Length: 155
Image (cartoon, rainbow, N blue to C red; front, side):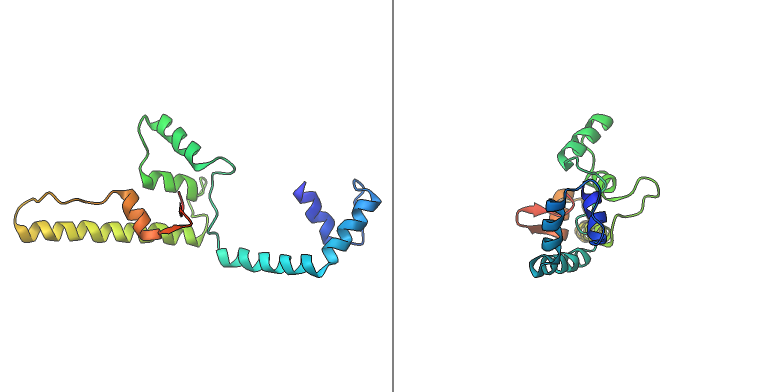
């Protein structure tokens, strides 16, 4: 339906055959209004500014269901990396869905690497294996990308 409405909006001089005259007149008036044009411009700027931030490859299926399916396939919980790859990389060429998704993962990997090398340096300086509380991937992810309104990007 949205595709049909987009096609109708593109050519306001030609009424679609599937739409009644009175509905067409109301839609044309709305689409020509300053209120609609203002909202449209705001939304256009917002879509450009997001640069793929909300893109994922899961379609309308919630992430928790993807997680459950991956768990059933593997017989164990998937790693955060496996889950993020499945939901933010395309299957056919394994390219990222957007720059924001790639940058978030790179930031996570960098932070994880820093913590690993820091832990190794501490062990080397001590001359013995110390029991060091190493943060989980989830903690590193949240530390890397942060939370916004109680939600964690990519998860």
